[in-house]
Length: 559
Image 1 (cartoon, rainbow, N blue to C red):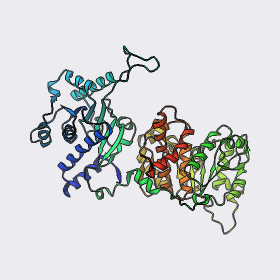
Image 2: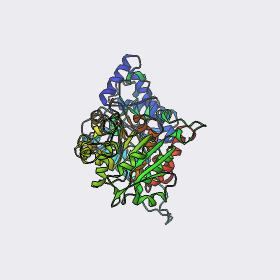
Image 3: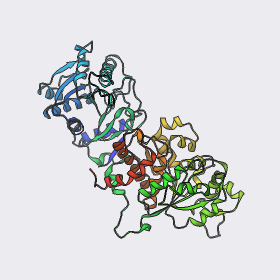
């Protein structure tokens, strides 16, 4: 199914329309609570589990009451802890009470002693206190309540010595409760991602019908844990107008290039990568190896001659174009050699490890045919016959620009006019800020807004990297990549991503789809690496070897 990413107001309108069309609010709440219980059963286990449900006053609390009922039917021992709920004419309250579930009211537990005891013995804590509508600071008794929960959780999770302890392994493992948020963790702004100081961080968030923007924006991503989207019966057509969606395995699998049995290397495209310098020999290796592992038929590295032997010793799958250099960085006159050998390539990646030195800046300007380059020399693309196109960059293969390629572009006037139409840009927030001419924190604070506006202005596809990377095209469509993985926060990870993207472009995918698939494969490779190695110590060189496994999983050959 298609999973949309919505604002709180968009979700409210969709739900209201669904109710008017016959899927009532009561039905949606029933489906939501059942989905929370199913998620707990599937991901944690409900039978014989001790589950504490924190019940609030609104629809979020109603979802929690429904979940409590289903969890009890699954064999869980469920305790309700209630804050500020009006129970008169509350059908879900009555149905939950019919299960004879024990109840504690916050108003009867002013010292919070019972709450602390419940947290101390629970296997699962369900946060159904405040939902997407809350935007006000958390104060008063709710703040006290959440602080008590966090303190009790911290106490259970605190490392400690034990009477029986193996010196090489520490104390026996202590089972800590899992926190499950209903729709959003209490205290998370569902539109901005802002986190209230009182926020109860979740290990698992079950959100209803659509991803909320606050789930994918910093710092909100820190509070949601694993994100699950529940189908609550809203017809898909009611969200067709939403242009922002989450990448799903089904979506990406449907876009993967075919691998026919009678293929040859030309079937899977030829990628050319312009990268590297004397101080950055790893970047071209990582990008090229990722392109190989992502299925490209032929990968060629164009790099400074000075680093050829170093790179080639570690990357035997690639072919090479040796470029002239100036103290180990690509020199301006390398354009001539590159343009002579560029014919026949299906995609071009420029940027990993180039540096921003003046000779390389001149090289890139000449390659793109900028006005300054035109006045300086007539080589490469600047020396055209009369019947050739005069559009800057028109003779380049489909283009991907990453890393120092982006930093060099940022120094050129109206750089976006120099690129072939619908080029793919893969900036992190700092590089995005340089391209725009603003501060990095401004981009971080409004990732969606900046990507939407600048993609339309530049006329190119942008993959803004980070937790829940964004892929946008000038027409307004945006896809969110569903990965927030600290294992990917390592030097060279972006080079691997760029290699995966150029691989998809070389294999014939259109620009937007190439960015989505390449970015998704990179993120899934990171998840597989984390599963095998843990999130600490995964190196960028580990990631390419997981790309084939990521593709295999998407094609349905792995569980």
